[in-house]
Length: 139
Image 1 (spheres, rainbow, N blue to C red):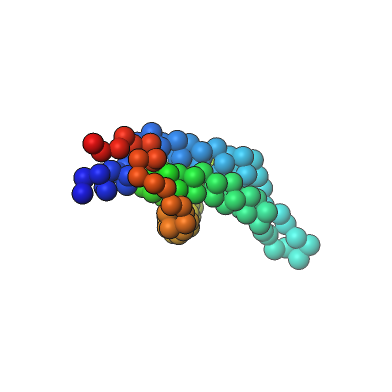
Image 2: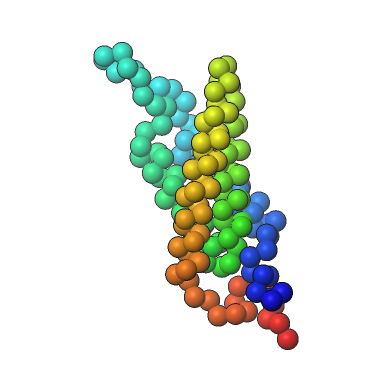
């Protein structure tokens, strides 16, 4: 039983690496766009366009799937979600209304849901033989 739990134990370095990747992806896709677009009718949108958010999601899907398929589900879910939440908190912390906290909570919730679902799919679709997940096989 001990060997069966070994593959799902938290891995601090993998978790930190995925958090770092998530923060870097946020900076690359969303961090540079800080202005709202004002339309002729006076309405505003932004600061992010749909293509930026889609790019972020697709960029993060690759390392999340990779980590989950190598039996690092905790790192895939919590590392990525924590990185997104930290990046959002840093990016939005200059909001004087204080409502950025709600946005950060929504990013964290959405990140947990999306990475959890992708991790579940990756875990179910990748069939790796025992001993090939980076752990030493039991003797």
